[in-house]
Image (cartoon, rainbow, N blue to C red; front, side, top):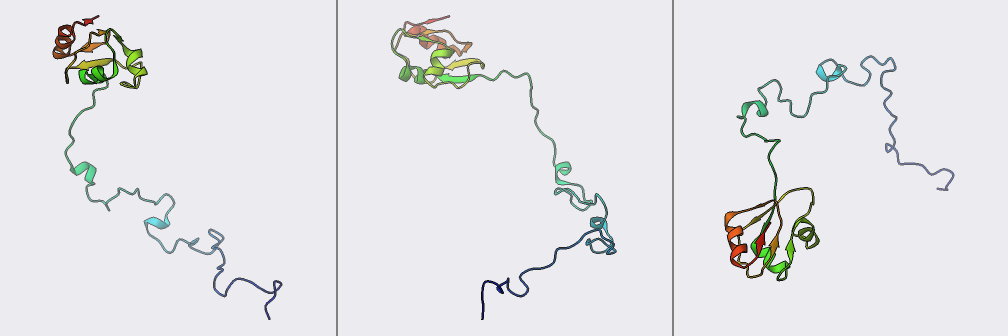
Length: 141
């Protein structure tokens, strides 16, 4: 008869914990070899002593830490988001979600058509964008 007082886990379901390093010879690490030693774990990229992949492949490319990264805006976006006679600068571009950061410089490129007169005050313009803005009657500062 089973009652709450004599119920327990099934036979074999609970194993005694391994007591490592208590005088049982190999301290639960099996026998000898690199993995049995202190600090003997190899990094996951270790390839058994063969020349590792990251050293076999040729190195390519270069990261320029001094490169200026511009936030790009096209004329097509200015046509959609701005009204005639408005000023285009970092604050107005961010307010209309065309750029994300106020501290990075902005460059306007000439993709798309512009029909509105806009006053543009940004860090850089492509030649095509500048020409299109002036052709539409706007001004560049």
